[in-house]
Length: 196
Image (cartoon, rainbow, N blue to C red; front, side):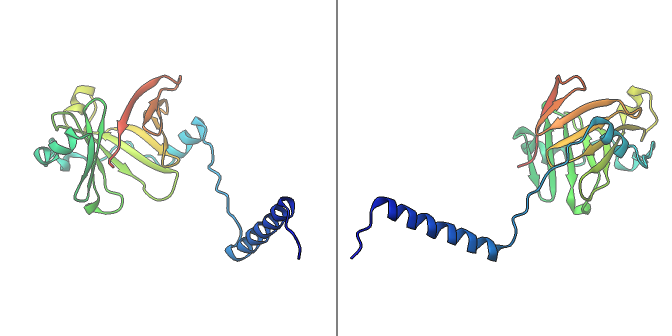
């Protein structure tokens, strides 16, 4: 009878592990690595301003959140879901509502703390990069001296966690990475809490 030493036993186990790993890879197929493209500000700007519309009809949406009272518990909780609506609350207390019962890429409505409509954002949808265009609405337009529906920002989301926001002239306003916002010089410009 053979007596197994620690070295022989270790070598045998290593051989079995190696054979098992090789056989598993053959039947599992090739391993795919996914690399994410790194975007520059200029690339995002070029993508965002392709086919931009400077004016949109937003008066049809009224001036106030029609479900302001129903949204209060979620606003106090920092955001969430109400049926097919997703609510995002910003550190300023302003919030956004997207109602997916209106389709896959419905407009997003941005409201003040008091529930007054400030912006309407239209999303191109689809795969990344996705583009969205924010237009002023209600009293915000008057305060800015813009006509209702004037383009205010162009956003380009390059991944689930990164997006660039530009003003109508193409100047970078914000660079969102995760829940944090950065200015063109790298300073902080706020944070947000997305629906869970």
